[in-house]
Image (cartoon, rainbow, N blue to C red; front, side, top):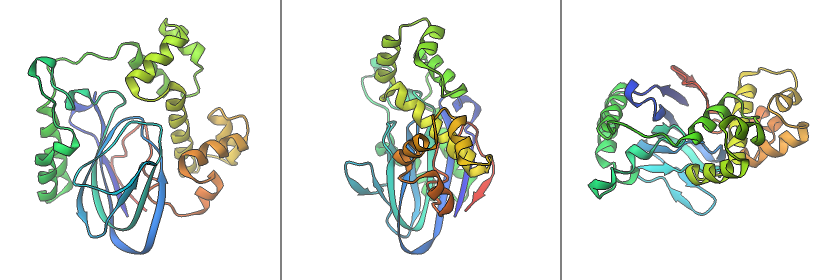
Length: 275
């Protein structure tokens, strides 16, 4: 298994967190069902080699991965069912920053291509002979849709910034910092982001804890629990299992290649990660 992350062109970095590839070229002897963390930003996925079907289950229906697939910004975990034999190119957008690539200004009167309509980009990804060619094609595609200026979502963007600085921040403290009422902050955040502020914080907290577990930066699992604001290990176990279907102990003891890679990280891993 090979996983790589890449930074987009500088002009795209306010909108796109990272590009990446996920390759499982070998066909595995049996089906694996993995539960992966939701991303706080929307993710577009483009297969460029599939020797075996890859199924994505969002909790509503199970479907084979189409030519281009959007993992929407939500609080729901996804199940991936596969037995290897696939390669994916993905684009992970920053939270709340996908708008320039979805809609044109109102006066144009039509939508811009979401992943279902981005056939031109998918064709280039399929035809590319290298990872760098795929990145270049994505850069050109997305830069062609950038507006001359882009209005931020006001205090929601600042709320996102503060949450990523410390996902344990309390609602009352965050609202005081932003000079808005807690009720207005909760309502506006959910309206703009599509999920509650509390659930968003939970995603970031579990993602940070997963990174700490993966890196082995702990002596006891309870150290990780306390680090990210959980009252005790049982509280942490329930929250972790709610997103991954696994307790932290079982996660560490097993082999879950996609789950261990497909989660939100603040930085971009500018090198290959092999599993």
